[in-house]
Image (cartoon, rainbow, N blue to C red; front, side):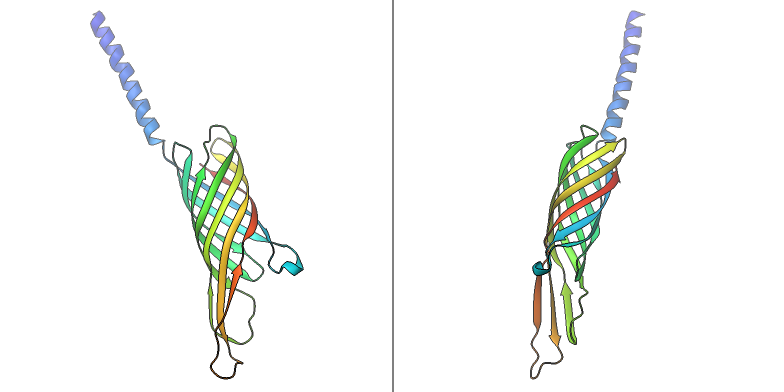
Length: 193
């Protein structure tokens, strides 16, 4: 009788441990997202002073148990004479051991661009964005599954426009302008995990 009781207790305890292990394995990798908006601070025409323009980014990805988050994101960056639409991959190091914590993030990808400044009688207008790299450091405030993010960093961004003016005599030249749109970025947003 005692052996049967010991075996029954052992089977019950093993059964509970197996269920707990199965649940913890399922929840090791989880979905997360973030939506951040803020300002790009920099110098477009340096003689005119600093520019303060708009930036938005949404990230959707997975969170691994080691505190690493991997995501894909899309957004929009507004400059005085450009609208850029980045598609980025993101890696975030955020241990999430506490509700509030500091994290680091690296976003990198490609931005498609639209040059909005009027050019004089141009033909063959070609406007392209370029690669974007955006290291960030931030502070996360959270409770439960919701999060508030405050982050700052630097966005390295280049774009160019080329066109042929119609007023040129003889074979028309192609004029190319390259733009260094790198700026300090400060953003605030929210997300769920």
